[in-house]
Image (tube, rainbow, N blue to C red; front, side, top):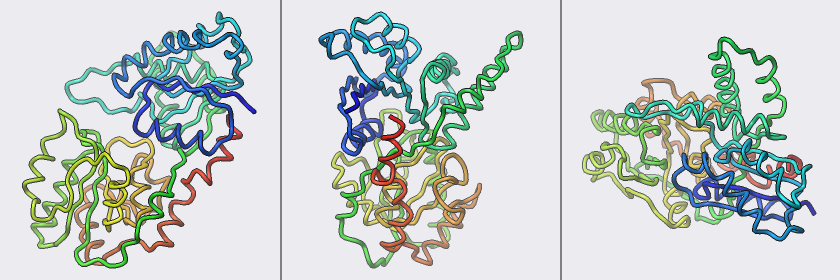
Length: 359
């Protein structure tokens, strides 16, 4: 059985769920070293030497691994250089990096300077990895484009073939999703007043202002709806969330984060339409979960969404409110069969063999 070492310096949220699903669905002998999901910039800069220190705590005869799997919060170039001097380390271990995100297109707040060192860490990690996988075509293409742009900025240095080399060792692997919990929820079969769901982080890159503006336009036109707003909030969450909680108080079925996954999927199952207005999305697990629960997706025609869903589920600029109005009037909740057909390809059952081969 293959021995696989997993190094994850941001062990929380989607990163944690991904690794839990991987271990449950892909047979191997796993060893994990992790750090809590906070201070991501510090993790990118310092987790590699910390992980090497953890590996050195293992007995020498337990330091031999066939594969090392890192996330992009690991500086893999530093990691490999430090591992070369560790007693008992297997120099032929295959080192792989999984890109949940890349720093080339992560949106900066207006008051934050662009910090190129983090995209450079991603670039160097990809260079020294034996294989790199991305959770979407959009993620891969934006990463490769960012690498090319950064290399062209060095006018007095030439780097022929590097982006092509990265492309050749890249593959697309959707992060498998465990749907068994959602599939056990009682299916909603009737709708009186359609329920709109928002289930994203309460942060600027999810563009919540556009979502709530669309709801205001619906209300002005006399369109009735109910509202479920989920997702994790933060101290600096956009003001529109507090304002909208008061503005739509007569329409709200739920507003705020729920710690229980069971409660979360129960709320998803009450929805009819799930909306994204994201300016930043490398994949879209929250949308796929809502679709599995029966919500009709209404998504911007950008980022990862066009590769995941058919064009009829996408909207163009400034058309969100009108599209919502049409869906509400038609009561467009998905059938049980349609919801499963749209999401089966994202399940661990569908993805596990691809991961097994890659690892």
